[in-house]
Amino acid sequence: MGNHISTEELGRLVSGRLVPAEARRIVRHLLTDCPTCQPKAATYGRVLFELDEGTEPAVASTGEHGGYGAAFEGALASLLQRDLPRFEKEFSLLDRLLAAAAEKPSLLDALRTVRRRDHGGWPEVEAMLRLADEERYRDRAKMLEFATFANVGAASLDPAVYGAGLVADLQARAMGELANAFRLNDEFDAAENFLARAIERTEEGTGDDLVLARLLDVTVSMHMDRRQLGEALETVNHVEQLYRRNGETHLAGRALISRGIATFYDDRHQEAVHFFRKGLEEIDEKQDPQLAAMARHDLIYALVACGEYREAGRLLFESNLREAYAAEPIGLLRLRWVEGAIFAGRRRFDQAERALLDTREGFLAQGEEYDASLVGLDLAGVWLELGKVRAVQELAEEMFEVFRELAVHREAVRALRTFRDACREEEATVGLARQVLTFIRQVEWHPQRRFAV
Image (cartoon, rainbow, N blue to C red):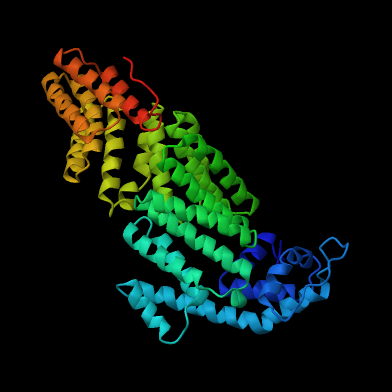
């Protein structure tokens, strides 16, 4: 494409998602009267007019691009002469906010440092959104704090300064990220409330596909939290299409990974492997290393579910996931769990026993009794292979009591009671242990199912 401007770049320009150097390059190129790029830019004429109070839109003609003509060029000139310096100043403020946040122990300290000289405005909101996104894997309480500040700041933006459409877009983004933060903090009613408001706010925005796509991305996660697999699969397909239409390969890859997760829980494990592989090919690992690590873990887990233990083991060995999860105890435990399942699948039962015992004890130490019980079913299968019948009987009694006390799904308790009773009669088999474990995992996503031996 050379130095020409893409439609996607123009969209990012008007929605404020370009770094200063890129914003300057695009605007200055448009002012050269490039015959290739001017028609594309005409699409965004009305948005630019909002930024230029002194320029009135030209009366629409029968021409292909609505007849913006000289009025559009005037808006761009005004943007370069008056608005672009303001944008440059605000991008500089954004850089200082992010730098201050990296150096200060608290968000409020960072804000005070920068506000001594500058008013917050759009840069402050954008900084809070970026910081909230960075914390989603590390500190969900802090993520909620950043997202709350972003939402308050966005609500106070002046449409006369930034344009009504851009303000609506930013407010929708802020409410969407606040919804996601509430979701990750298990406050689902608040999350659904802000998500609905965010989607409604997009009706007053610029029509930016990427704003809507992000909100629908959060909607997919909400459907998954609510165990609504059908709705999640339908929505994630739309999200992927929106990202692809706008040239966002990384985000389309992320949507494919989400699709893989939903497909896996819909009991289509081989399809899930396909989506995980394709998603990993498309995402930019440097942009989101945590996503890449989680997707690799999901792929390995799906391969185990498909019985492809040798490939799962190879990928686990090559994955560097232990380094990726170094600061995440639960992540490391889940990794050790899948390692134990791989050993068991390859009939290396002594190694499987050690891995699963480590995992179960780790979950118990973290207070995760439910997951410890699920690991126990994998461990029971290994002990049955090793002939440790008495140990399996004791484990089955313990797991059944945990399930009953936790008041998990009635059919899950029934399945575990069946396994316990079989252990009491010394009739338990490896196949039954696996059947019970598979059913317990399925019934969480398909609560209408009933357990049958």
